Structures are given as structure tokens and as C-alpha cells.
Length: 446
Image 1: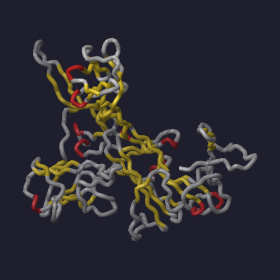
Image 2: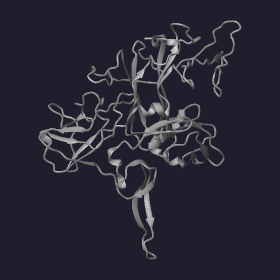
Image 3: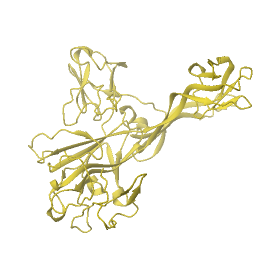
Image 4: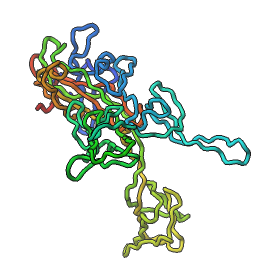
């Protein structure tokens, strides 16, 4: 976000107001960086941070609007957080007659058959956790939500609000294949919502003319008359899970009656996300050294497929591919060459598909911000609220606006432990006006 640098003044005192447990100096190859505490406090007892505004405490989180999100109060108060209350996919939320918050395992329950010599009885099932935190076993399999479709065109209401179709405060006339958030490459983040008529999928796109079906609201869909006919309609979709802060008034509780426009305000979020580990394949080449037992070790384990691997012997004059029959995989990290073809004077190179572990966030969290010069967010009869803008921590907001709001939306949640949001708000740096206190900080100001 912001870095405090030494002022360069001879005799500049070391900052003594910094909090314990945090580094005040960082040294890299070419210099020393020093951290400055630019916190400001109001006149209340006990004093509260005046230039940090949003949801950071149990009281502040209690004022936030939560959708399928629960507040977990902790001690000390600043460790209170919010998290999703259920999994994202609509199919999984009501298994075994309980509301699922996370899926522990998919496996089979093996039971004695009752008679010696008879095969064991196997029941496919899974361990789940409900909203009370109780673990339970169920053999019930995920089923799609059944819809009641009426009229022509067909109209149906979903059990839960969906996050597939745009801003909950905006319009929804969108293709169900389009999510509200995207990957870095621009592709939709959410898996497509899928509609089925008598177990047959209904197309979610059309070349020309009306869509076969589409969202009309957060919890409503419309089915084109040309698609009507099936007697049983089912659907799967991603459930909306979000938390929206109360309206933030930047003018409140600033020390000495200061002006909020004297500060540069930056988006702040303290987020913990569980990591997924997945194996991937990457084509790589490695020079290998064969030992006395004709084996060579690989630096990175490989996918043991000779169809995608090539061993080349270079004797300094020509490079020749070793025939598949003359070398083999011992295990994922070792290969062996036939003694009859081994040339101790040659350099051997293996090109193969290496296995690597990729770390990725188990769930995706989208942060959004909006602001206005007047409070048009919730006042009766007020003008429409401003549109949301996707942001990241450190984003510089419009400091000319007095009122702000932030929202976090959780996507692709498979386990309620996938993500915790400990803080969401704005942090101000006092750069202008009377008694600015931000030595050495350089921040681009829009």
C-alpha cells in the first residue's frame, strides 16, 4: 500500500510510535527502508483509529449486510472475521437433510457381509459438515434443485439468490454462462449455470433471437416458449455469498476537525485463503548422468509415459535418439538405460513431462468499491446507487467523495474453511492540509 521512507534530515529520530512485533527496518541489497506509523486516533476512550474506516471489529461487522455469510466473533475483537456459511454449488447445499457447509471426503463405507466368504457390502457416501459444525455420513448423492415453471415464456424462482447474473442492484438480462467475475485471461470465473428439462440440458446460448433461457433477477429465470414442454425442470448454479460494509462516512471522527479530503484513502482488506494443491505437467529437458547400475535420477519427478519422453545421446559429433526399447522408467524420478547401448563418452538429455505441484486459492474473492458525494446508497427516494468497481487492496479511491462502500463476493466455495475475511475498509494517509503526517510516502493521486 504505502511505504514510509526516512526523511533524509540529519538527526532524524527513529520512529518510536510503531507497534511492537512489526519490523521497523528492512534491509535489501542496496539500502535500508524504515517503516513509519501514520496511524491517527480520535478523542474517544479508549481511543480508536481515525484514519481506518470500514469493518474490522465485531461491532462494525454486525452492521454489514451479509448474504449466506456468517460473522465469527473472536477475542481479541480485531480477530473477528466473516466467512461463507455454505458451499457455492446449489446441488450440494442440502444433502442428507442438512445444510452442507463443507464436504470432508468422498469415499466408500465398507461393511461386513454377515457371512464368511461372501463379498463385503460397499455403500458409496461421503462425510459432510452441517451449519452447526456437526460431522455426519450420508449416502445421498447431489441432486439438482427442482423448479416450478409457470406461464409462457416459463418463469421460475430459485431457492437461493444466484451470483451468475450481474450486480444484485442492477439488471440481469444476461446469458447464464456469464459470471460476474473473471479469471486473469477474461474467461468467466463461475461454472455455467445449467438448466435441465426432463434431465436433458437446455442450451444456454442462441445464435440469433431470444436466449433459450436467462436470468431475470438474482433468484429468477425465464425460459423461452420454444423450449417449454418438459414436465420436470431442474437447475444447478452458484449461490450468491457476499458481505457489504455499512456506508462509510469519511468525515466522521477525524482528529482536530480535519478534512477527509486532506487524506489519500486506499482500499484495505485482510484476507486468509486456503490453498489447493494440484499436479500439473510441464515439458522439461534435463541432462542426466547414468550410474554404475545404469540408472539416472531426475531433478523433477516425471509422468511415466515414454510416448511423451525422448532420451538423446550426444557424442560430440551427432545427437541420436535412444530407441524406446533401450531405456525405461524405473519410477517417477528414475530412468534406466540398457548397458548394451550405453556410451560413457556421450552426454544424455531427457525431454519429458515433469510433474509439478501448483498452489492456487481454493475459493475466489472479488472486492468491489463504490462512492458518492452524497449518501445515495440507502436513503429512501434517493437517486440510484453508484455502480460497483472491481478493486484490489491498495487501490486509491476518489477522495473528493465523502461516502463509500465496499463489498466482498465469495466464489467457488467448496468448504466453509476456504476463506476468512478479517477486515474490509479504507485506510487514510494524511498527506495534505493542516499538520500532514506521512513522511516520505509517495502515492499516485487520481
